[in-house]
Length: 409
Image 1 (tube, one colour):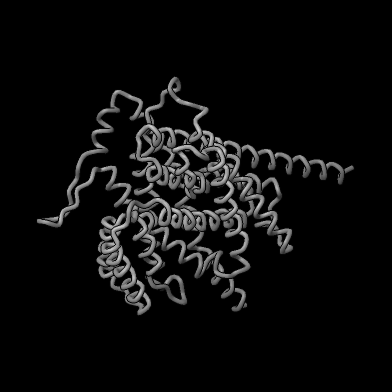
Image 2 (spheres, rainbow, N blue to C red; image 1 turned 45 degrees about the vertical axis):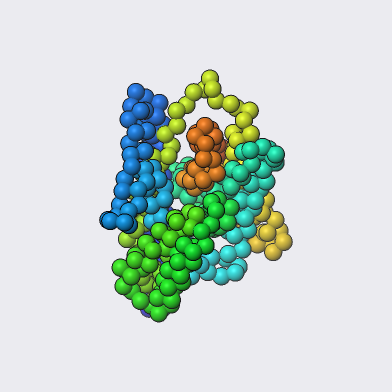
């Protein structure tokens, strides 16, 4: 009797970090949505001028000759979001060491689906914007917002298999990793190689310290700050320092005993309930004028096609193809309709999409149009995904009722 009990406890120990992560991310989606709506209200109210003034207030941090001064919005996007990306780095490492991505076979479907869900939207956007000055926004529809997607899935698809929820979570994490690579390679200004060398040296030192299993957190913070400042000066987006630092944090054979687990457990609520809502409040505020909004703009059409069409096609197509080739079951033994609905929820690209848009479009008019397009596409993806889950659930209930009636007769 002891062995089954021990087995059950070990399953609970493995599942608890994922379930806790799911609770944080899913519930934070509601707060994220409220902050996005509040930002839209502020930007379209008599308080709009004050809202913009606060976002562009200059703030200086440092002393003497070592002072960094940026507007509040830049501190949020470059500074606070570095902590968000640090948590993403921790999540990615945890998934590859302990989670759904720890083996090649388990990794196959989420990684394949994430790649399909990044490549197809980027191709659709690029095709629509080819030869246009807006072509550089091709990375915008590649992202999936894990908080919104999981939040809607837990509300709209309560009967969805847990395996499908795990699949969406792993897919979104790989998707985040892909977006980070895209940002690092394609959305940076002219490089200052001296500062870049210093930043990479600080990150290398963090990996060496992590390899030695050092658990002194202030040392990692110091190396992270050096890397962040160096990347900022080098022309590399400083949030990349956060991801790389997260990957350097040491793990352990037992997840609950590792510094990786303790830092993720401590920071995840702050990221989900603090940083992401603040980012939404600062970035989702767009003055909406339907009279001046161009529904034929290649930005709008590219983002809409990428998120609403490219995401479900890429996710469903890649997953279905891999299952056929390798004779695998769909995640969680889900139906094709449930997989298609999950792909639609993958088109909710709010946080990371807006972040990439802010890098792709320095001009305010283009950025505002991109933000509105992302909001529209994310809302439509959420509606379509919810509707498909509901229709599939109704169809399953009808079949079950019919089978029960036939059995009685």
